[in-house]
Image (cartoon, rainbow, N blue to C red; front, side, top):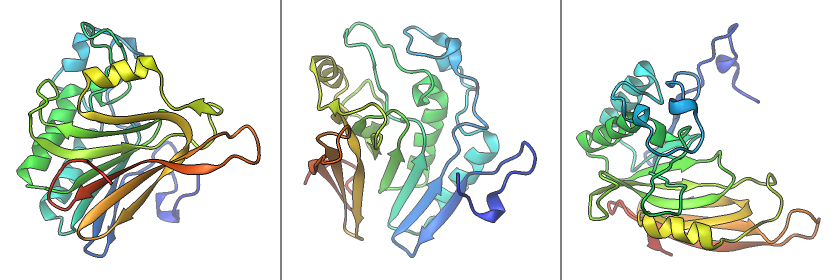
Length: 243
């Protein structure tokens, strides 16, 4: 992967997390959720009833990176605070049975205490415009980050946009009954799509607009791109609205 010379590995050591400022508009925190994390609990995978995921000592970022991130929250002066990172933050039940909660334990669902600490730091710093940009799972998702995911009325501390893959997974599909069932039991998740594409973000001091771009097919050269869904965040609102 291309990196700045200052980020070149030294033997087995690599410091990949860093922060970029785009004037006073955006503070972009690029996180490393791989090198310093706790090992995935219960053997990884999608599993129900994993008590290890609730261990208060579990971490996604590691102690040093957590302190660096939260210190940055306290000194941030930009309008929008952004986390660019690898694994989905919002709770994401992968079992359509409403009586069974079975998350992917590679994600922040596998380190619940780490997510709680993240949200507590956001609230302690009084951040009102938190946007998380995520990849990794080869689908489009959009949702709201809740202080308590068990309570749909709980405070929203930020929003998350997950971008699909550009080509991996073939043409894909828009959605199906299984994913509709998943969204119905996770009301904080507002959108899902399993086509290929990317997310276009247009950011001003007053609003953030995310346009989910999809291709009707990637298996042929004449695939057509279109906007499948657009969301807007109004400055200071901490929630998603249809564009």
